[in-house]
Length: 176
Ligand code: ZN
Image 1 (cartoon, rainbow, N blue to C red):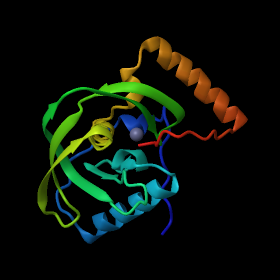
Image 2 (cartoon, rainbow, N blue to C red; image 1 turned 180 degrees about the vertical axis):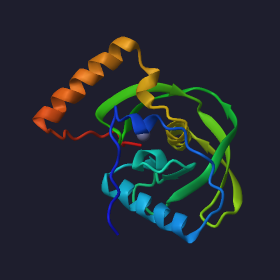
Image 3 (cartoon, helix red, strand yellow; image 1 turned 90 degrees about the vertical axis):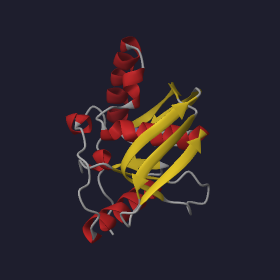
């Protein structure tokens, strides 16, 4: 299966607000598989449909070390959130940038799985951060929006320089 193209900041399509999925079809399941493959190849631990220019509420996550625990959330809704967790975040749509963002430490989320069946999940730590980060994508938000204006303009300069040099530095922080 061909890998999908991941939109990169500041592509305006990343600001699109995703619509709910009306029906979970075979076609959608094929997209889920392509998104997982694209996420693993990137490599990343989460990918929202918005990032591959598909504007329906769909995201995939796998935070396991051996990439054997793929999670799929269709029409995800955060029911409860609590605590506070600050973590360096990276994003496949904002390459090379890793910045600390404050999120809720625990979330309870409701979604449909790849078979269209509703489920609820309680998550904490990295998984909770990942879910919040990806749901933001579906709402057209990016993690850099949480940074100060000054830092954002610094980032834009850094990104345009990096594109010119075409560098790909290695980081330990996973991108989501
Ligand atoms: Zn992201």
